[in-house]
Length: 500
Image (tube, rainbow, N blue to C red; front, side, top):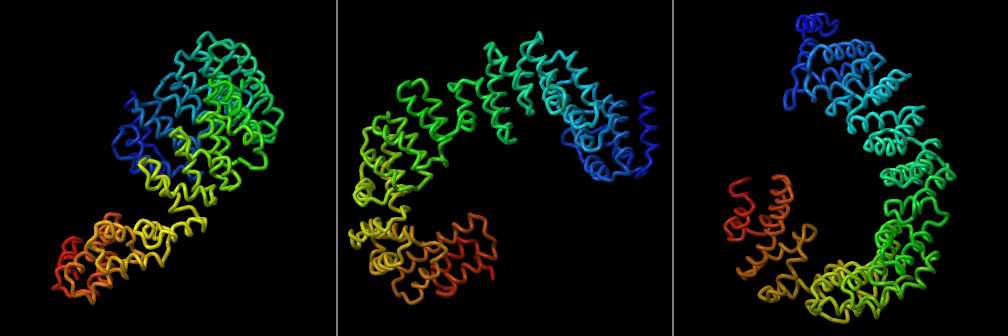
């Protein structure tokens, strides 16, 4: 009978004829990996209001009359969600005890207007034996108006601890004063649901702040201890002065090392909001903080790029603590324009500590202060200084370094390596042009190899073959005859041999 009923449904469809029948047959037989043509066709058709009711009816008949796969059910719910009416509630209610189908079913039911979806969800919650199913139902109810009292009742009185926890979390889904009251009660009982209550209260506080209800946000956070690490940001958001609050946590952590995790969260929250004029308290105590807290505070200073912080950080570039020393050197990139400190960092760039040297190098390369340029010029035409000046886009240094290379420095590994790092797509044509008038075949080959490396890097980055042909023409072909060994090497290496 079921097979006959199903065939009757398919043949009786009023739109699309055989094609529509094929779509519903596709739904009925669909499993992961098969064609989704039926899904896209029905979803597209469902946007037509005139066809939506018929599509809902037909999908529900398939779901009722045939056993479809979990994937087919999930895709069916995607189609149903924007077009579902009360008719969907009865059919989908049968799947609210199925752990594989409860989530997509709830996704449809929570969007239904009126009470039909809500009633089905409430009824299913009474008989739910699965914490996973109960969680999905509770989360769906949390998005429906007027269900807060029922969810609170489940959070307080359900015999299953798992369901009580899920209900507690669900109370944080939608902003509601009654939910806050229930959560404060649960938090006060400090039983196995307490962490769920804290998380839900934080969620309520964030929603209250977004709605402009600061009083409710503060009331919610009053039930969550400051020592609860995941609530640090929420406490800061409801405080009158977030920076003062976070700095207070940092100074408390100095006295009580056990609060280190809260201090770390406070440091992260301070990133982007620190204001020098409001930092007097932490700066007065900065020298007395332990190395770990100093690292956190310096991290919050860096995004400001405010040079006034540097005098507090400067002593730490010679700290005995490796992490603090590294953080201080890194911070100089953003906070330092002090000549004495930058000279010290220039010394560190050639020190034995490779990690610190690498950080110092980045500071010298990227610090925008003219003091850095002054220090580098004092080293004259040393290869080290010239290389660094080139990385700082100093055109004069580039000219001097290239001249050193073309005048015989190309034989020196240090000079050759320094020059190679300066050649890129912005200047490779100028570099390659030197080959045109050279009689020294070895120098010409050295230049050619550098040019080939630059072009090959572009090939690896996915540039088109047409782009490569033009690049080859402007760097190699325009400077050398086809018979030249460098030309042949470049054509072979770049895969352009015989291509016009």
